[in-house]
Length: 222
Image (cartoon, rainbow, N blue to C red):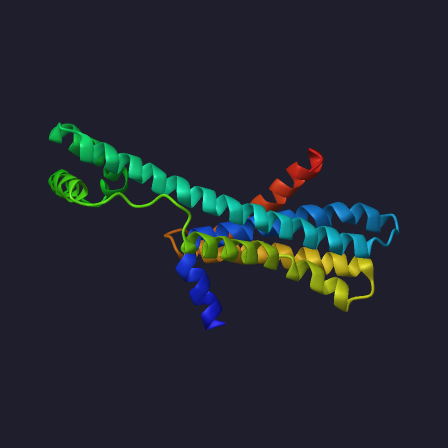
């Protein structure tokens, strides 16, 4: 278990991990809540439901993994373009202004203007003497995509297990939905633990927000 956590921690930021889990849970809820209408009519579509849940999230795991790679390459390309512009700009003041535009939004709450100005000067000097990083897809990008795929796909487990253990389809569906709602709460609770937000309040907010998103998807035919 520690090795698995280390794997996710190495390739995904905490917010990225929680985002993927949240996305997967909502996708599963859309399918299982939609299946409730069939169960209410007495139709036993358990096998089709399980195939839909697993197939949908596996497919979305692949798509989200691919998007992770795209985002990583885009971000490196954006930085490379900035560095290239700084390296070839003969106007040192304009080059520093470009760097300030990049770093100030993140650092302004924690640093003085003098410190950011000094950092911009140092950055310009450093960039002019270094090679621009490659924008090609890296091994870490691919491993990050694998981590995303695992997280999104794994959210099907709490949805599927009740159907394997409980013969009564209606009860299994209720247990499945209950587990997914609990996991939505725990995702929000864990997310808040990384911030200065009240854990319980945010956990319930994420759970209710997830239900609202599912309801909207159902109304719109998702």
